Amino acid sequence: MSAMFNDRSTPLSLLATRRSGKPRDLLAPGPDETQLRALLAIAARTPDHGKLAPWRFVVVPTDKRDELARVITEAYRVERPQAARLEIEALVQFAHQAPTLVVVLSSPKTESHIPLWEQELSAGAACMNLLHAAHAMGFAGGWLTGWSAYSGAVRDAFGAAPERVAGFIFLGTPAKQLEERPRPDLNKIVSNWRA
Image (cartoon, rainbow, N blue to C red; front, side, top):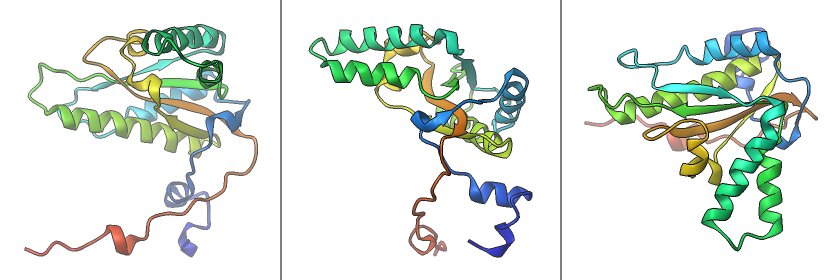
């Protein structure tokens, strides 16, 4: 990494060093209520064509995680009645990861002339802003989807169609130092347009 990113106090350095944490490895402390409000305010400062705010944040408190696990496992059993014990245990574990959980919903304004795709991209940008803000505040985050994000029954626990779960954002303190992962070779993903 370039020397200009070595000082973690600079904004570019924060962007260059953000790393996803595995939600199962994120421990307390997570953001407190004041910190979480600040993180969500930053997450909401995302590109938003038409000023529609086509996303919502639903905080799932720790004392509601058992209920979330129940919603997820019941929905899964309806779709997959032959589900094995280990599948169900994994879903229960999913609901109980990390000290803080924010469900980000893509909440498109279908009456708007702004294309749905742009509204969905804005929801994804809100997720990314939340992860950057958490990193800047000294926490780590993991953005998960998986089966639960695509289940209509799980989505209905948070909202209603045409909303969709953009992601389950888990926040907390890493149990160990996050390791860097391989990043794309810019020579393979960047090109100049030739008309």
